[in-house]
Length: 243
Image (cartoon, rainbow, N blue to C red; front, side, top):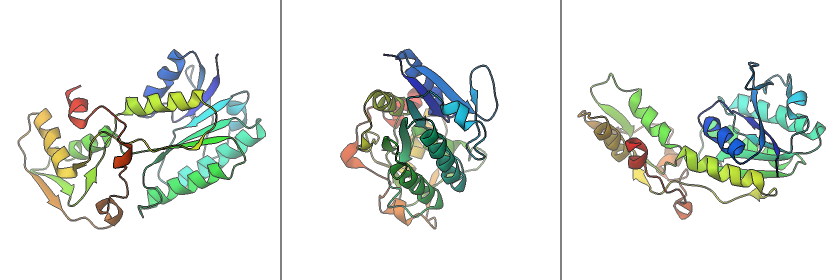
């Protein structure tokens, strides 16, 4: 059965994978964007402009949009209010593993967004995931002009494939509202430096990787962002690099 679905952040890293997946499943998908185009519908999460029209008639909203923290909270509040006026569609929110355990401003903002969704009065689902493979690749790529690659000492990551996250979200969009669902983590927990070496090998690089202590990452060092009990992803970082 065709479902009317609105995706926020549909042009971002996750959204670009999710939108065609939903369309292939036979759903009618709208992509929210501040810039109107034939492929998107206009709506600004920060100002609320256009949101009432964007959510009108939709049955599911998949909220993937993310920004710099504070804007996430304001945008989520505006979206929740518009959805409440539109007839209470199912709101599916994408969050991060450890938002209640890692004391970083971005994580605190994501936790505040979760609270807005939970208290919205809407039917809701929250899916937390670990970091995407692309994050670690980006951390290495931005250092391409340095003689070494610097990674945080004592920190491991459990990166997950974007396509697998999209598949989980597509399944949840088809399901009844489920509240807080089990976390989704990548298949392996690996030290940050080990992941950087794998990245360099995949690019034929020979630079050394240096692990340095970095302030403000206590929650990461304690593993608050990991979910080894939910290592449900199957595509490893090395497989992602090979692809």
